[in-house]
Length: 206
Picture (cartoon, rainbow, N blue to C red):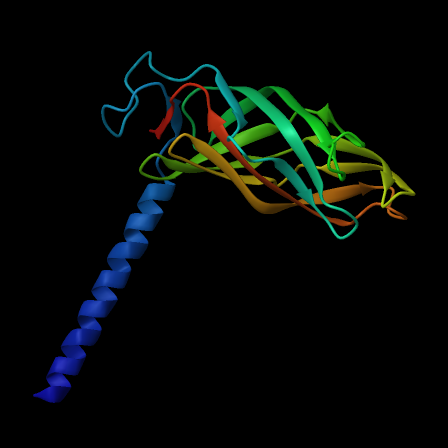
């Protein structure tokens, strides 16, 4: 009898695992659309978001974490336009500004210049949840007097930059950026850490 119970439990575990895998595969096949309203799982006709504005959450900063000196920026604005329903949905960045940057207390010895605006891919991963991934983009980071004597002028590729989206927030949790150059003095491992909030409510639907 005990052996039969064990076999029964194993079969039940296998069935549950198969159901979860099936559900995960099914969710990955859903189309994605950023929507102005949330009345159901599907965005109603004519309610697709055409422009999205995001800024830094209060009391947070745009952080470029690295081994040389962490760079903190006190102002950031991302303005973008989602395109048609897709799997994933393409999102064009119209504007990306990062200001008041530095390694010092006054946040004024660094500059972050966006040289190539990123094209983003939004993929629905759950109920009003998704991942936002950059397929291109470049930033230039210029700092003077790091530690009192080090100057840098470095370029980083944003390809692969990953943000998690949910509850009107976009979060980069130490996502790595790729160094373009120069390699002699620029930190090779730079991680982006930030929390953005939307100025107008949008929802990740299908």
